[in-house]
Length: 193
Length: 176
Image (tube, rainbow over all chains, first blue to last red; front, side, top):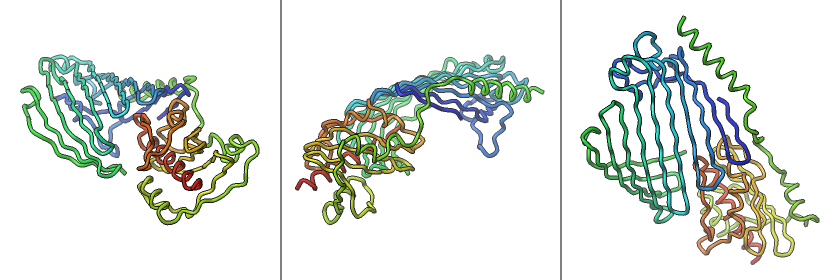
């Protein structure tokens, strides 16, 4: 891990990690995460981030990750993978806005045949703090893990902070058919320590 | 064979990146000693005084900090309407030392004297600390203005806001 920053608010991070080990059959990227203690690091991933936070309330960042074999198995038709991500966060007083875009590009004939060689998504979120203890948010998510299947999910909810380190969350959710049509609500509690 | 080539390639790439001239890394730790801060604030520093934290004052401070406060008294320097305070508060894991100058009940300047956390370094920068200039305290012991936060530095921002409120409250009490 290597990192640094300038007085102008620009910072960078570089990391070499054990990388993903994606199943070449399903090519589900999320399923490629490993337990660190048992992680296969035959094909490590290199990740870099540039971040600007030189204005109060603003963050702009871009990240790239490269792994020369995302399955860590040669000859399976799912080869190198690159992730690019960028996001912006703007908080001014009680108002907050976030936007994030990310895309994976996976090389290999099997990944292309499965139409999973490009996987991407984005979300847009707006939030407003009614009081220091009560906030509202709305979020729109769109993502695709396979060409032709576009998942959409929308959430709107409320957060309540009874203590500065505790949040109680509730939101309603709406999904399209591609995302699983799991309309409903979520309840949660968070504690940071 | 394939795997060994991959590891070698990644290691070489990292080595090249490590060799980058890189951005100017700020030294984490002490920016200014408390003595130098006081000397800069008062060219002829007055003798330090102490305020004892008893009764309601202690309760108000703990309400601001949202945790018990172990100290029994706080040292300060005062000349005319100007007072100076050197206070500590933990951001996430380590104490952040802040110097606050208050003039006639308003913050004249706030400076991070020592920052020891691994994240949240932005709170040291003038673009953030100058938001506190001329801030005062409302009756409910909150700052009379909004302080815009920094994404990824929530706990450090929170610590500085608490110390600003605490310094203003202490200043109110020494002027009673």
